[in-house]
Image 1: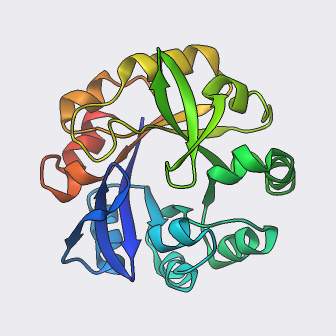
Image 2 (image 1 turned 120 degrees about the vertical axis):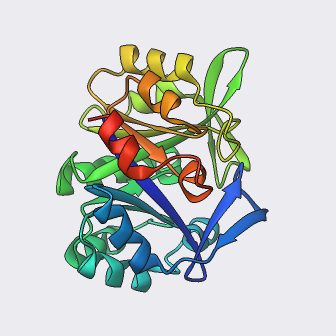
Length: 238
């Protein structure tokens, strides 16, 4: 399993949100470039970087910063936040980003995102679907979790047969250090075998990581709060 240490950025600063609430942000005294270097020193081969300003605005805000980080990063970057056009995505690849994450756009304009996958390849685009459980069914939320799509995870995933990567977040677990939704992740693994699933939301311990059966795991708040040592996590999941 690949461990993706996560770094969320607002105004160039490293932050973490609780359940996606911008008013509930914790800022960490870390330089983004130095943080990526530390991830690499700990043995990470990937990092997950999110432009939260871009995600909120629905358009690039910190992509200049992310492009500069990608140009110098000693590991591969998977980046998210406000991608809406082919040119925005291509610019990230030109800067050296390995994968671009597409979230709400996959729900609102699936034909466009399918075109991105066809052009750039399934290995370079990660679908990101944030779900809220309603009577046991995972319904996809969009626009920073403020809108409900009315469609299930299974319905949306079926629109992208050529996709290869899915970042799956249980909204109720994100940033809460309450443990992942193992039942949902296991079901997704069974129903979506063509997708390499990245578990996101709630990872709080090495025990959580050892229980996961996914291709990858996003580790954010637990890493920044010192609950998980990155090098230990990578060794445990090798």
